[in-house]
Image (tube, rainbow, N blue to C red; front, side, top):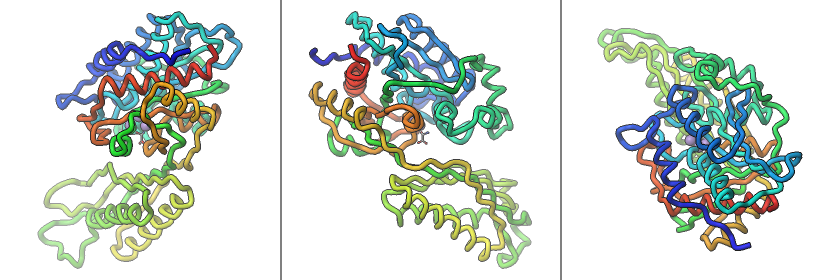
Length: 409
Ligand code: HGY
Ligand code: MN
Ligand code: MN
Ligand code: MN
């Protein structure tokens, strides 16, 4: 069978329509997990999926499963999907491209009158971003057993609002169990969010796995006092200590290439220009494709904290909140992606995912791989995130053919 291509214009129009929900002035999207805007996006997606002939289930952590029937409904579905929640200054494509690619696969199968043996299922995973509620990849993490349902429902955001209450409030606390989910194979399509495909002039990334991550909450406690009357040698300044820690995180990453180290969140208290900061809350995000190196980065971070406490007198509480080791994807699924890209004549290369993706957790219980496409200058988690209709068509067409290989037409 000649490899099928998807409907480029229809996919692009769906992306642009969805991007109107939570649209920001700079051309991005802000749809934080379980806000009313997330609900609006979910509602629109469900409407489209039903129009495409899918049945809808919602599970106890708000994951949405849209299923296109197969000839043999006793078979595990071939799945795809991603997330609709975004970063606060997110783009139009991170996550959404994977969800709407799944929908376009269903629409294209309908256009071509193709009935697959295995059902086809598109998942929208709850709170992949981990921005409003930390950590990330919660919906897929509960289904894969990395997190318990209760611990995730009890998570609170920075304002103390509980995740489970938000799920109820937006009407997405479903009754489908989070256990026993099965896929014959699972693929996630996603923009690369980094510079490598563009640098190598490739259209498709054949994703062989995902790098590991370690996230921490750090609380630094010094002493508030007057900015004008407190001599420099008598200060216990939490912010200057935090500054040393932030630079150390960068140094640790640079000493463990190609590891990454980021401090993206910080609260300064009392945050008054003429009071020496007494309390700092900040986040640390460490990543590496090799688990031993990721552990070494963790050890270096702990040693740095001990050194700074001794040097500055600031108390530092380093609280690990999330860890997963680097994840290898399934060889057959990787080959389905690589072979589909070759059949369609798209330039392609193997690549490891630098970002966390729901596919990483789905690979705990199902054969999994991903399809990456380039984004302009490798920029993501930024409102200027950009890609083209042609790149989206390429990624989605590879997804369609990879799924067909596994779903047995
Ligand atoms: O942080 C990540 O890698 C993802 O965007 N949640
Ligand atoms: Mn994403
Ligand atoms: Mn993201
Ligand atoms: Mn992600």
